[in-house]
Image 1 (spheres, chains in turn yellow, green):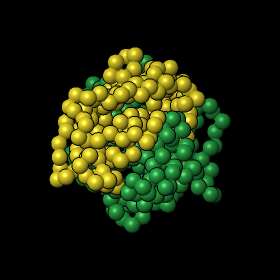
Image 2 (cartoon, chains in turn purple, orange):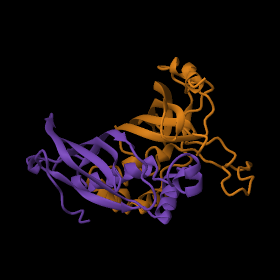
Image 3 (cartoon, chains in turn green, brown):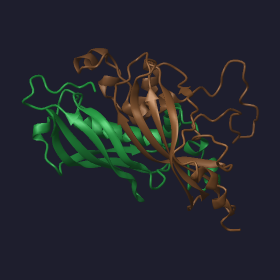
Length: 155
Length: 189
């Protein structure tokens, strides 16, 4: 990822694609995710335990999936973009080990709030079974070309 | 008879609107530190420099390296083990630590006992960046809804909880609404 590139609000159109990011789910990765986000519920790293709870296999936890949305959105909005709100983050089917989760989206809405360039991105995750998370929305701020130095980042 | 499990949730259904926090703050185990952020980023292969490069973060208007937004909930999780406690007391392969599970949803005596749970829905509004050295807590546990339901995995209820995430200066950094499905798996499973 080339973080020196920055998108500007002025250049975005409703319907633009938020490029997909793929997350293959191996056991190794699931264990690292549990350690990294401290959700040690065994349903997220232990197949037998997960099956006892009615799930088809161990599955990605909500924080790991949130992180997939964040990376996908951040790679789109760049370092000067600010994430304001996540809504409609609904985990519809289990994102199980052995699947590749693909997070992707599109620009749903574009408006100004005062001088701030706002976007509403529609984001979702897919696996081989269909849409697994969302579609929900992530509201972000992007810098504007006409604002000297770009819009301020920190919220 | 078939609806007994549903009836068991009625006390919680009637408690919708109640704040179960009793004014307590639930603090994360540690202050935000670089190693914790790295471990969060690794499984995501997420290389955004705002989360590890101080100069770049400052150049973009922050007071230094910031935590990933999606890590806020993790940063409020308390320790599973503390000095003087013993939580790993069984060699049974699937034994769980003898500890209040810090991520098992909201404990309340009004809900019937359940053995399974998972998060289903999340809405979060970010109000303030979280910097290295900050420490986060959850404040408030207001029950917004309780919907008993039988699903593919078992019988239980979807409960939606509203919580503020605050920092060490008592500033609200995020507003969170989290829905959890707490359930007992179907017997045949």
